[in-house]
Image (cartoon, rainbow, N blue to C red):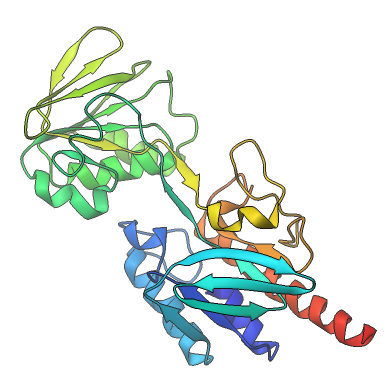
Length: 290
């Protein structure tokens, strides 16, 4: 959204294409590190950004998916639902999807005790015992949400310490009485007939639980851009330079699908605004040549 506001201020024709508005931030319970908002829900922050874009007359189309992006000469062709749109520049910001454990029982019990979003599903586990699989900052924050509803939350992490969690969130987790940790441990199986009943660990131990929440990272959603042959890293993230330029001229990228090491909303917004500036500069240079 931030990039679209800047693009419009540069007097560029600006169109946002999406299946759903808001992105991953809408699944964040509380955001307390976005400048200007001491404490706001992810949904509220997303709504503020959308309102700001609309106030600048940014056109937004939602409900369909971008299926394919190609480039013919100097023109990008975007297949959006049944439409084919053309543009001289594009900014890719499609976000990520949840990384799965890949253990027996996970797929079979998804939606029946297995969840990838505490903000979405914590309320269904009031008074229950659950585990949170993961040890990054997102997993720690999700455990705090779960602890507001569940009787007890056990964080299961494959490493021996929470090295990637923000200290403030780690301190909150450690101070929460109904959260405990099980470190240097992996879940190897999720067991249950019609719902989650227990999990098995690589130690051979089993634990009775009502829910398994999984937060072990994300997978970038980039398959619709495969024909652009963008340079990517080993994680499948799009490589960008400090000004959000990809390896394809006129194509820019922002947010969680890029190789930005520190995944934060403010960083994605910054990338988007730089992409808008670079797109304006790119088109201006083309006009001068013609």
